[in-house]
Length: 416
Image 1 (tube, one colour):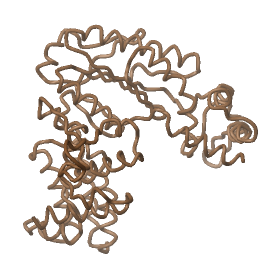
Image 2 (cartoon, rainbow, N blue to C red; image 1 turned 60 degrees about the horizontal axis):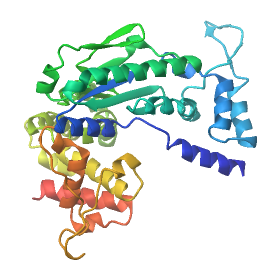
Image 3 (cartoon, helix red, strand yellow; image 1 turned 30 degrees about the horizontal axis):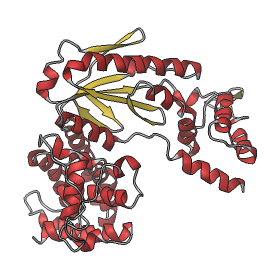
Image 4 (cartoon, rainbow, N blue to C red; image 1 turned 180 degrees about the horizontal axis):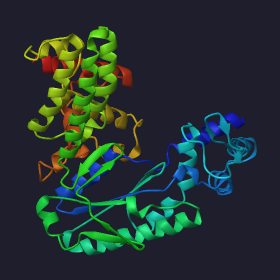
């Protein structure tokens, strides 16, 4: 019984606010397409996991989440009675009882921290600011017209001050020195904001940044993704150089595993954010994949790469982006994706009957700017979904959809 109750609590915890880079990019591109500017604030906490108060956490689990009885006893036993010691050259310090914090590296650590932070959402909502939290990462965002930018800055400042006060009461500390603020919008709109280049958090003045790193993704004020692509290229070529130095010692399967783990995984991480970028930018990433294919199959630099990609069954960069967005779209329509994605998709209602060619399609909204509007999920996802064959869209399960989708994209790119 207690195990079932804990499973219900764990399921509920997954519904707590978590960071969604896709949604932040969606919100910004939509705002930019309408002519507004956005302000993104990335708040930093000092030693967040080490400062949680056990008494506050257990009380919150009880009062806020309704965890009682045996399940609450499990959490109490898990948190209390832990000790810590330091060992240096066979010398062992005295054990110290840990009265604060949750074990890092554990499965429960991030979940408990998120549950500890849950009341913070009410504080942020009071200021009418969009927010997302994932463990110790708290992100704020709000958009407005350039004429209202001063009020926008004041709103973020007021919200940040309230957050800091809440954290002080709950024995957490916000690190103002590492907090980053970045305005986002069209270059012509951002030039109008040159007079305002910072905001004040408590007694600390935070200067606006032109680019930030958000959960491993490098974002810039114009959403050009240049910083992210530059970082990807540097890291991927470094890993490729390292693998190439030991390639003669590796088997084919071992090389494929290393390349998939250290290179392809980086190219695929959040690659849906690259949708709609110019070909010149995506070609840089494609060259990385081409060189990786030559490395795996031990081919020369000038060897034609298409047969190599077909042999390895690797989809090109553009197809991988399409694959990711289409999969997100399928999951959204099947109610297995976050609700914020599902809410962005609207089914198209045929004007005549269900046998119309438009049956099963999604509504593609009108946009103003190719650089922003056509890169938003609300535009790219329906466009890609509507272009898929009916047999792919009608897949009965996610595995069968992925299999059919990859087969379709493979034929489309290699057998046009």
